[in-house]
Length: 301
Ligand code: ADP
Image 1 (cartoon, helix red, strand yellow):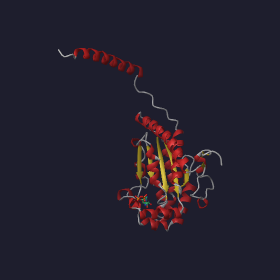
Image 2 (tube, protein in one colour):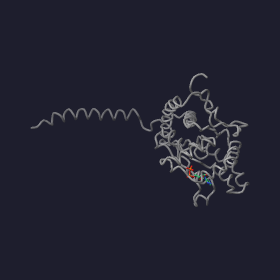
Image 3 (cartoon, protein in one colour):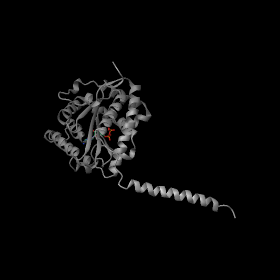
Image 4 (cartoon, protein in one colour):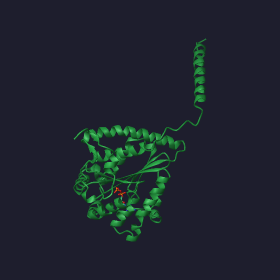
């Protein structure tokens, strides 16, 4: 058993390694972490503070002309909890520094372009954390499962995506890819909940049930994504998401670690600090003098 918390690096426990087999993956587990929900929530709040400071540092760098950014890519089946990650993990940092985008069925304009066109346009600016709720990976997931383009077309995309991500990394984007995995039974429970709570109706889409029928095809498509696009520069992390508290803790930890790895410093002042301090001190003296004479002069005559 041992101490509560992460045993070793979360990334090591969650990262797709050689021979990763999705069919043997258990979405109810908590790899690399020991402890229950309460401890996880405490740890997440603590790491959230670190994340928030790192984000401010990144933002400050961006304001000073820094071009580095972070991109969190979230994939997962319906009800896997992507929205909850945005709300609960990204919600711990200043929204001014976040660019969140979700990718649904492409619009007419988007369809007229290369599939990476809309993705590229949504990339975070320097100093920002970008969050993709679904992403370019839909173009090798839903597109593959539903034969939306011929196999040779989607088949060429894995390498194209790797090359595209490599270029983004070369430009200074830190890419953190997380696939949230729920078991079919848990998805059923969550869909059921959506149909029994008026505050959840808006999340329900009748097509979710139809998509469920394609579950095995989706798992094959995900397996191919992990086999072919988990690269050294942008590895995949597969996150068991039956326990929402674990998935949120895991993504918090992966993102925080990734940003710690950027070793960002606070930007240096682009003005003469001593000179500005002296000006401020002079103002203070003037004010104090003025207030003293002002008080004397204000006596009613
Ligand atoms: P969510 O289901 O995540 O709440 P939406 O209802 O807006 O979000 O739409 C997501 C749907 O869009 C999913 O069914 C997804 O598979 C689909 N989608 C996303 N990208 C593509 C794409 N490139 N081609 C076809 N369908 C896509």
